[in-house]
Image (cartoon, rainbow, N blue to C red):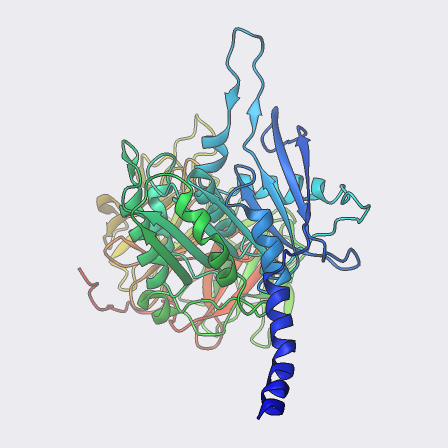
Length: 571
């Protein structure tokens, strides 16, 4: 009996040793402070930053990265020491940054404090600062023992966090650049109306889901002031992220606007944010509106690139797609086999274009200030001249609507109608910059984008080409960094949705004028789109120097064909 007990105790020794090792003080990483005053994104600013390098870091391979705003918070270096030691998070270099301050001109003046400007605003400015300036600066440093610092560039290897305004700043950095940051720790985040943060709970529900994992912390006694109610804003954020299928966790308490609760739960939050690493973060299915139009697993694919500026994508009755490289004055054709060939060697600065009922390609020839029709062999005939157009749409009887944006102050924006006989007339004026235009599937309504606003106008169309019942009808979203939506080319699908190329990506609207969802493009640019392919269910988008495509569930409406009446929208 005594021998058995002794053997049992001997068997337990290894387990006790492991437990003792876990409870023992872990190796302590090094923390070094620096100053950064060379920013071009936030010119004139000076700030401090600290770099934490764990003892386990091996300079032969890039380390994971955690970035925190407002400097060192949540006892992070000690927490990282323990979690890395316990293998509950990967070897991670911490970068802790204070907001910028622009020094005062003299002793009688105040400095400019950049915290709200840098942290509370939406847009990609702070992400650019991190990726283009601060993190490259970190990689110029070395650990105290001489180890070179190498940071992973993979978003799956990066987390970002902060509290209050620093928390919304962290979320914004990941939201704008999920390729660079995918794990977010947000404590008492300022998702309220200081600089647009209150819009996140709506925007999240409309954007195509991104590969993000988000931990939210707040307390029921958080701020309730002129900018909004922090506690209520957090409930809205959590519900929106959950609605869209994001990996989101939260821990609610009853605290106020301070870091006590966040510091207590920070170790568990980091364990959750880094769980299963290096496995990638799952992307949610999105709202029912996304599920109605997008195919699971289908993403953007490159068709061709190397152009100066692409525009005017349109499809013929076979589903072949034509587009322009405007500065190079060439028109290209994408065959049903996916091969790209030159259709016109000189398009005369061709811009917007559509196919007519007779099969001819009708295009704006901006260089010649004409509307030109091309047959299958590229032979041209002039339909109208005397004005510099931008985009056009051809209806099923051959009538053509053309936008003339007003390229200078003395030339006001107009919408022209060119009849099938070539007779032209101005049918609308008054927009700031008329740009893309298209019809409803039943061709009873004409939609015209005003690029320098956030509106798409709707008009009733009459047989003689005249327009009535003009309304600012479609309400578009626009980025925080712009004063307008930049709405450009547009198309409708056969179910009545309007697809608008904007600064934020493709904004898809219902027929009642509401944005249902926003589909960004990989390079963040899109000027126009069409539905091509043999079944007209592939989006072809002109995106700056390239053309992209993406197969979807819906089919485009062809306006050179007979009108189609869609179902009424959900009101």
